[in-house]
Length: 594
Image (cartoon, rainbow, N blue to C red; front, side):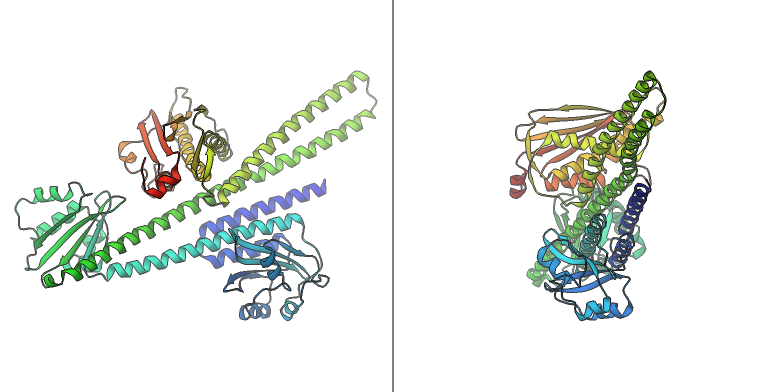
């Protein structure tokens, strides 16, 4: 029993440490040094290692990026001597074999070359774990003891798990750095363009401008910083005499009418300068106004045209870079949330499974003891029946505990992997799996949660060409939102309201339709118009990130070439309708639409 208790205590400590590390990664997604130091220190502590060193591979050489338990002399030596791995080092063996390498005693290992660097560090038992991004080796994580004591399987598995987290942190930091640099370059280009540029979003509100706009139109920073609407911007210029026509309202009406259309005109400013104004729509909604002073450049129209093209390209690249940054943040946030929930569930689940097994053993021991007691046959039979009933109940607990453990493992796999590969998948199976994951996740998050789930899955829906993991992510989000809305309505109701969620599929001629409907609070019209915008949340402050529905829209529309619509009536229902083409890959390549 003491051994079992010690194992449970160690398991609890590992789960707690893992959750703490995930929190550090979540809070420090771009502070790579803090994340890696935390990872290395945690592994060294949990694995009872004397030293831990993480190397990052660059230009065929290994550079130290984080250490724990290493002296300043050794740290300076490692920092000053990046090395190329060979078979005689544990890093080289990890690189060549692309797997975990465990050396019980370096002095007894025939392949290991005990070089000068290792003499300084004093390694005896060593564990090398590869840092793999897909099939690419990005580094090596080495954990060691100064005495001979092989690492346990549980410790090796723990080090491997933390190595996976290190790869995620390194990749996130790399992406953030690249995007930040690209944005800075585009901002410099934007500010140094010869034209004056101002951008309005889909709601016709100012979102960006360059320095030339302020100088050309003499606009104060305080006015632009208020992010005025296009109507306010227009009237501000009109009040200064920028427009000579008396029919200003008619001009404003024509200017805002169908902003998806390109518009070009010339006008003369009060100081006599002639400006050419061009309006260009932005693909995701909104428009850009480009002002060009053509008073002295009429003879250089070809050069001006090239500058405009450069401005449009820079603006499109800026928007693409921003979209990539938002998408990366969305996926990282969702993956960390899923992993956090799974780890929180796994801790009490381990207690349930382990103590069930222990209790079953104790029942056998108790039965053996009672057989020796001076009891009549009837009492013995009753005791035996009770013991058998208890064992049967515990077996059911173990059975369902294993099923719950399988769900948690699926959630962890879901949070670690990327989009995966596009392949044919059974759409009904994806819907069923998503319902189960969402339901068990909701019950784990909130005790007492309950909802009726009704299914109407078309057996002819069949197979469809998709990224299964991404479609599962969309359905999990929509189902969770449905749970939330129905539960909120139940909390506000006092007439025995029953929360219900409906999931259905239907085969179409060239695709499949999926519907997720709840009888919750519904969605107001003004919220419905903005609900797919990034960082716009339908939930109260503190209860939503504003990322879920935007991710759903990107996955369905941009990644799969499908559509996602919503039908709703406040205080009655909300229904999301997803349409996916069966040959999504072909449609995305040809640019076709549903």
